[in-house]
Image (cartoon, rainbow, N blue to C red; front, side, top):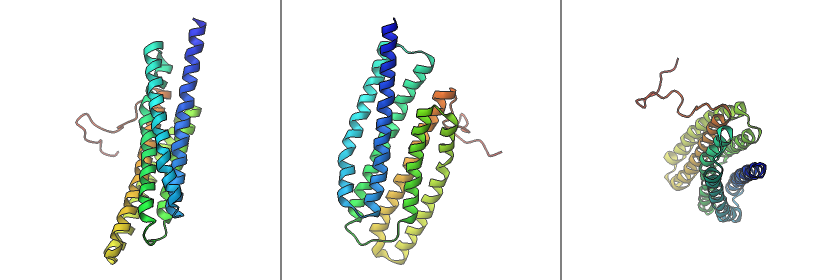
Length: 231
């Protein structure tokens, strides 16, 4: 029995390591994708796109390990919540990697055209999105529900910045129709960073559940799908 328990704990530790490895890869991909965009570095963009296969491979390994733990070990309570959380956050982390790949693909397109404008707001969005992913991973490592909630609260800034970027890009398109294709690509990039923030929020909601056994996803939503009015 002791050997079985020890093996179970070793497999849980391996699961933690793989999740953190996946998180580290996608966080790195975000940073490299924005560098490819800001520095107009097409070679770096190609590397991000190529490295996404490692993210996909690791996601599949985590899925397989989770199923093994559930099928063979029949975990209880805390361990079960951790495994369930792993199964739910892994797709979000993989999607973050996909968004970094999408950003790099847009960078390849944008880098072939003259610069449209300084990318200050988009760079700020990238920094915040990367910070949210890092904060989510830290909350997971330290089993810190308050830290996870703090990351969730950061998502509003990304939403506000995205609106600001869209307005600025719309102005460019109205003033000069020749900028439309570049402005549209940049608007896609802004949306990708906003989605990264959403995915980091999803991860943190699952972390809160894992630690506090409290479901905060869809908080404020009524049974009919409408939302509670603000207090």
